[in-house]
Image 1 (cartoon, helix red, strand yellow):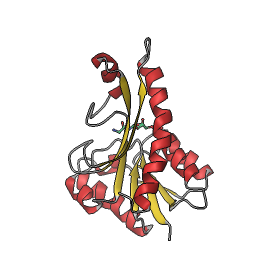
Image 2 (cartoon, helix red, strand yellow):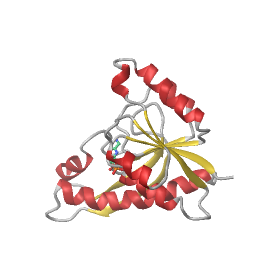
Image 3 (cartoon, helix red, strand yellow):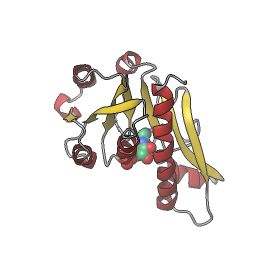
Amino acid sequence: MKKRVAILISGRGSNMTALIEAAKAKDYPAEIALVVSNRPDAPGLSRARSAGVATAVVDHTRFGDERKAFEHALDAELQKNRIDLVCLAGFMRLLTPWFVTRWSGRMLNIHPSLLPQFKGLHTHRRALEAGVKRHGATVHFVVPEMDSGPIVAQDSVAVREGDTEETLAARVLELEHKIYPRALRAVAEGRT
Ligand code: GAR
């Protein structure tokens, strides 16, 4: 039985698209059953719909400061769709320990750096400022501490002379689209 996966997005959803494409393969051990966005205007939503994937919006602004209520609504959507695994793909909300613990060992995130370097935002800018020679992306299990948790997949590119935040981001994004499908396959097959 294929694992039922929900992808959580907030924006354009290019990693989501990479996962949807990978999951079309007959032998892929997971199916993308649902895409959820916390933003009603996320461009990724229409990309998911045109790929024939069910979508849902759980708009965090409707819950004000009630982070727990937002997460309960999110969790209810996942339960309703009998989700086995969750993939965060550019989902820009911090999740509380309650939600993270509930999905412990069943939730992955992709982060645009070679963790544990450059947790948080603006990773490409910070990598250039730090003068690192290699930079990359990481897929990891989500734990309560931000951008931490056991690493499932990681890959890197060389930082080039003259790289800007944009050129480096573009090369890292290409990597992301390769490692996320690989990581999800490994987790869905129980190889972690
Ligand atoms: C990706 O680069 C992802 O690694 C990053 O946001 C981008 C989303 O792009 N995630 C984070 O920074 C999480 N802290 P996408 O919507 O095209 O997949």
